[in-house]
Length: 229
Ligand code: SAH
Ligand code: DHB
Ligand code: MG
Image 1 (cartoon, rainbow, N blue to C red):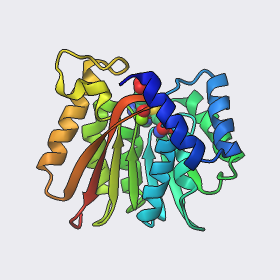
Image 2 (tube, protein in one colour):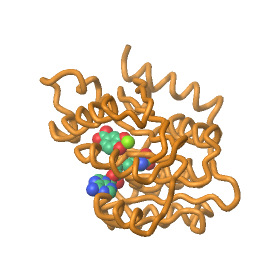
Image 3 (cartoon, helix red, strand yellow):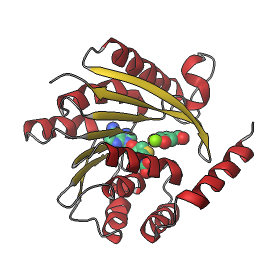
């Protein structure tokens, strides 16, 4: 199996099942033009997140790691009227691009972007008694995944779903000799400690799925909160 084949199959699926949305296409284009790294979820992964949010009946979504707002727009489009997304982004330049993309998608009133390191903005959300969020998507810097999972639990309720992106990293998760090309060993260590925390956490029931596609070989973890916080 090759990257070329994974990309071709992704294209097949996307062409049939993931219709073009001008706002999403424009978000990708504007992000590329602004020099953002090409690390947003793929179109069919965005659609998957949107379908999960709909199955979940989510009214409130929290995202960690906005980048240019691509996954944010997919998630926000899952919401019923009155629904809300709060998305956290550390990089001011990315935040500016994301705000423009979100506004261009007509979602400025649905999405609130909070700029700053998530380990600083998450305690603020708790202090403000924001949440509980029905769905939490963890997709920021991977070395902080253990901390993000702890804060996610504080902002969740029984029945909330916590999805974490990039938990396989080309198989590096099980191979100590393989370094995550983008996050280095700190990222991999963070993902491993995240898995250990999830495994030891009685308040969630979880698994993870490996994925291949246009964005390579990676995976999502899904943790359903099964106890009151
Ligand atoms: N969810 C996006 C991709 C996010 S990429 C999508 O799929 O479209 C990861 C993002 O996390 C980057 O934009 C990066 O700037 C951001 N990030 C990195 N460290 C962070 C931190 N400490 N707090 C908040 N965001 C952070
Ligand atoms: C990368 C991919 C991601 O989906 C992400 O959230 C962060 C980084 C990457 O491939 O480097
Ligand atoms: Mg990601």
